[in-house]
Image 1 (cartoon, one colour):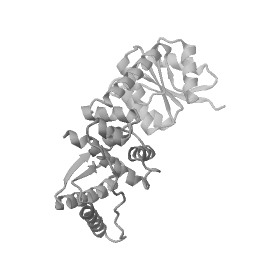
Image 2 (cartoon, helix red, strand yellow; image 1 turned 90 degrees about the vertical axis):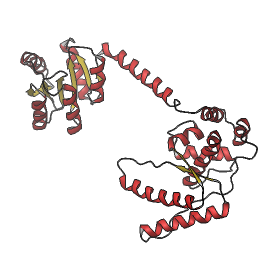
Image 3 (tube, one colour; image 1 turned 45 degrees about the vertical axis):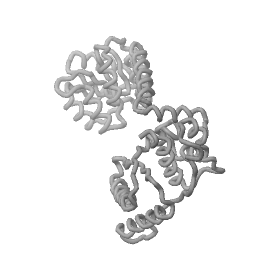
Image 4 (cartoon, helix red, strand yellow; image 1 turned 120 degrees about the horizontal axis):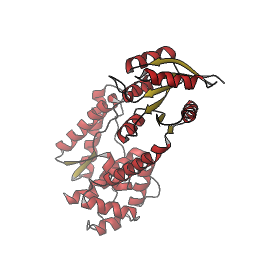
Length: 319
């Protein structure tokens, strides 16, 4: 088994000497370098590529937490153990967010520090036992706050719909309960309008516009429900293309004199499934249940469109 290569980072030379003396006695450890500040720490990690960095959380200039974050981002294979004299909640959670694999108090015994380095070297995460309960309490608190915030922005009617969905009510039962009227929720037509050409973007957008205009002329709707544009920051090109398509959709609605209602994807999913993070399969099953279909709608894009329509049907009467 190869020896674990360790760098010690602390602004007090006496502390570094003490730690080196302790760790050098261990047959499986090798202290390859020391550093007294953040800049030196990054330089030494880059030069020696250690397995573990024992890092003081309070350093002059750049803090230990910032150094930890830089190390874990630039050298993902390097494990960092934060060493501190104080059990401060704010620093503890900042270190965890920065990617620290361990967080121990300087008051621990030498054998405990050795075991901590061994554990982190094996890929385990480690907290000083005196701090573990605080982490659990913070996690539980965060979970409670997340659960509460998930429903904080719901309107009264949205809460009613969500409650009825959770009880397994059908669309007819929901309509009756909310005085939407018998037969309010009924599937007339469902499908996908796509640009068929492989030509220019302009031509494909024109095909989408004309296809949608034909649907509007044939079915004569009173309103168009549209999902708000969402894009992941890593896929800007997708957002641009979706923005073009959304533009011609809104143009077709305006030409027909249709009101356009906009709903976020999270809101739509929450109304139909009870969860703003529902996957496509969950949405498909929800649409199948709500409309009494024999099978989930295919392709999934059809279910997504029907979900937007149902969301407006349930919520639009409130406006």
